[in-house]
Image (cartoon, rainbow, N blue to C red; front, side, top):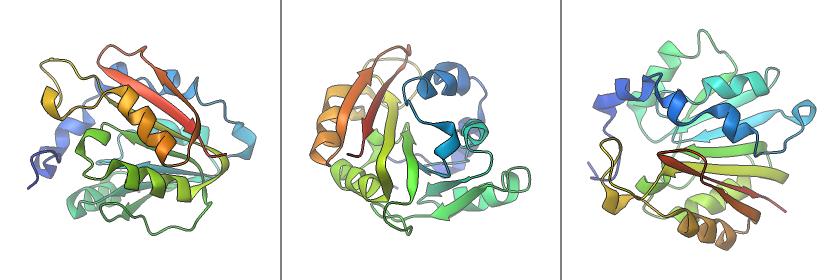
Length: 192
């Protein structure tokens, strides 16, 4: 297994409720400026157990969230444990840099604690761009590049400025960095 990738055998760590304190969905949502009435589809890339798909369901009650992951273990876990309670969360097996969904199909694409694992971040961001509708938003949350007891090793973490540059290279506009979280940064961009 690639040293940068999360080990699916540790999937229960992904369901720790303290993660919602470290990465509050309401704080992220406050920076997205999306019209709730117009939303129908979100894509959670690197969804793991779907832990962060669940809090975003309330923003898209009549729509769907595609919870995408490269791990069959995670897809199977979500199918058994998330789908019965949240039928509008749809687990979807993805490849390293591709997701089998139509162009211009999503209002929001997001990645939480995934960016540092990507071998080809710009390629994945170009895929996010392809999937988004015009004026759709992308957000990336990842670990600050600092020493701390939680999270991946500092040397594989990324700086928010690098993520911002990669988003711009992938075609996104109005890319902003927010450093309000103690352990993580947030970068938000828009498809023009």
